[in-house]
Image 1 (cartoon, rainbow, N blue to C red):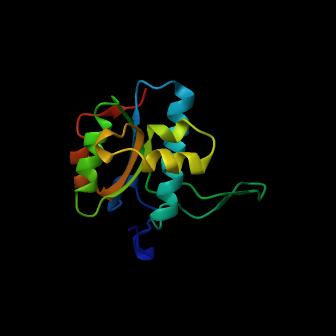
Image 2: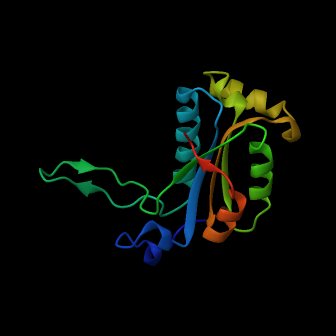
Length: 151
């Protein structure tokens, strides 16, 4: 999943990219936890979807700044009750990459404990703090229709 090298067009507007990236966050979480959830799913997404990050940039004095998402990333908000359904629809949508942060991802500071908790929870009862989606623009637009930018 990702962009082929010839598709990476940093000279064009983000809307011309074949794939669209959105992160949907539980809009009712405190700001710090919401940002944490968004950053965590963004990290998982950039590690799994090739070509999302543009080349490094140099400023006027020659300092290097790591590449940013050249095709953009929109952060939207939704109620916690909508995130499981959104995730399920996205997983079932052809060509859509999904990274998620189950709520228990913020309940421990020990990753093995997170893995244990997740392994003991049925998929149908999982709550989510954030979901990251990358896929064909029309499919992503349909999945997130009606959601607003995270305020």
